[in-house]
Length: 384
Image 1 (cartoon, rainbow, N blue to C red):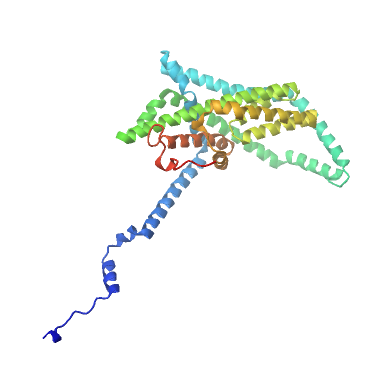
Image 2: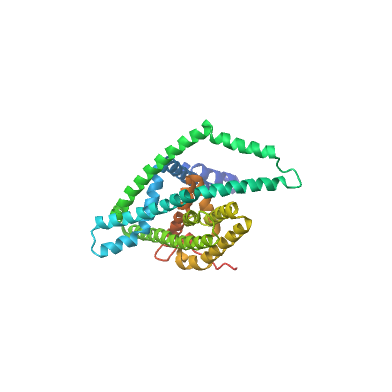
């Protein structure tokens, strides 16, 4: 009987593996390695879409977003002034008005200095520039090789003159009038937003924190305090460094008798808010004015003064005034400047670095006071 006992057919290994997979639900396909990769790709696409939407909205509403960001940064910079006035018993509205008037007076004074100095010395600089241009033409004609002929120079000058007197230049001037109107509108909006930020800034932030509870609320408060501290310290430190730079370069320009010394010093102060690039632009402009007005020897002396002042700033002032919490790598600064310039022009270049410093400050306190986010903590010391 044992010889005729039926035995079950052998089960092939491939069949045993295929059947359980066929019975798996469809959503289990997202659980393997390729599925997790697809999920990450979808998440990245969603993040990119959101960032692109935000950038598009910012570029479409620059008349609102730029005054809003500038007002936020100025409010952070003058927050200690508001706290000081309130502790002295001054009502909140009066303290806000006094602080706001101080800010408007400072900004207006800078603009008035530039306009007054340029208008006062423009005729002399124009005459000196014309003489310098004629000297350059005469020098070009003495070169042993045919660089530019006299006819080519005359044609270039005529082309520039025709463009200035053409309708195209007039349309550009009309566009400039529209830009001036937008600037005035943005400035009024900036002052209005800044008034409310100075007066009710803490209450506004507390209102935004209402949805958070427990640990999330503590983290949001910590992030807000860090952002205000970093932005305020950055603006105050940069303004102090810029003021020292402007005074040092102004003294050098006055000693060397360079025209437009006052507006050039004010320009140095303003360009100092654009790291790396601003100091270079200020030095080039000062050297060009000295070259046109006083010759190449005086221009070289101006370059030496600019380099000396920048070295003193970089080695002594910035480490003391700016602090380590706002210290960014030069590569990060260049990337932030590039992105800010592409998105917002000159204003974007000015705002890019403080916003990047604030973002880095937030990362540094994400998991606790002085405790960076887990992914931002150093894994091991880097050998130099």
